Image 1 (cartoon, rainbow, N blue to C red):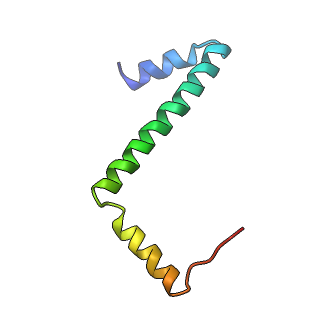
Image 2: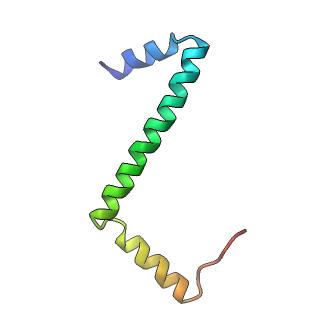
Image 3: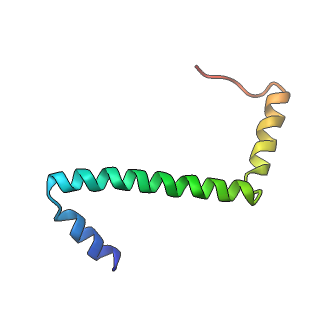
Length: 66
């Protein structure tokens, strides 16, 4: 299925089905994002960001916004 076909089908959903689809997609997208973050973390792709954050914190350059 092409993206254009999917977009066409979504555009034809009833308001009730569109709301149900939207909720499903939010969960799907969140789960996909979580898996990507977990994969990036396990592969060490976030290590440099963590090191930078710790360096800023230890040097007093970080700040808390409440």
